[in-house]
Length: 108
View 1: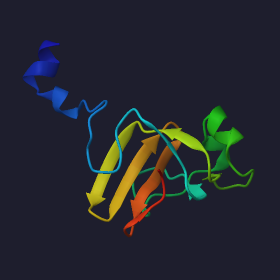
View 2 (view 1 turned 30 degrees about the horizontal axis):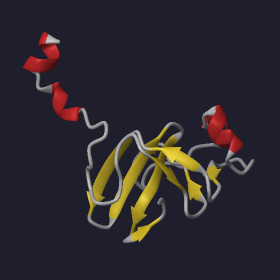
View 3 (view 1 turned 60 degrees about the horizontal axis):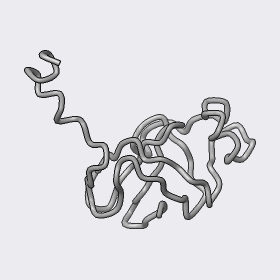
View 4 (view 1 turned 135 degrees about the horizontal axis):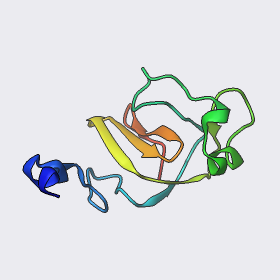
């Protein structure tokens, strides 16, 4: 705890905190559309493969080579990465999905 406090690492604790007007860490959301799962927060990160998804993620994905979760899938928000006011990425157990991209909200 001394290292955590002296290094101000608690600044990275966000559980239940509203980071933006759209999403809250720890909440469960539903995908409005089919979404690609990426290795990082942004389109510049590679799309994950189906086999890289969690077992639960595989239950809600198309059985293709690339990981695509189906619309209607419920996901737990583990972290929020705000790129700008038009781009917000959500970390879920299987990777990252676009919560808001080009001003369009994909998770609700």
